[in-house]
Image (cartoon, rainbow, N blue to C red; front, side, top):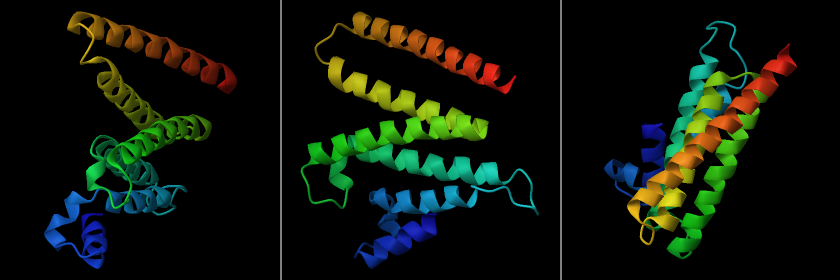
Length: 165
């Protein structure tokens, strides 16, 4: 992935060692690696899950970086537009990963999607409330959101266990 990202960076005029400065190069490469894990391979059983999780991990990390630092994007739009767009993409992508993982019984994808959904949510809550809210209230809010997420995830698990039975 690093090599492909460096190659795309050099095609766009960057020095090859600066490939980490453009996280968008990693998104397509990560999606390609995740697509390799779409089907279970006959020669190496169980390896498809590693492709799926590692590819999506790279994609979600790149989106998380771009959602907070829009100035490193290739897009010629204002930073706030880029950041808001990648935040929406992060929420939608992680929710889609959870849905797809539940549907296909891919536990790694469900866990990764849930983790990044929570990361995107906490980052957004920090952006909204950190400056004006007293810190004890902010952490109380985070705790309440965590409990709410646990309740929602427990209901998802009970529903999927009931459907499997």
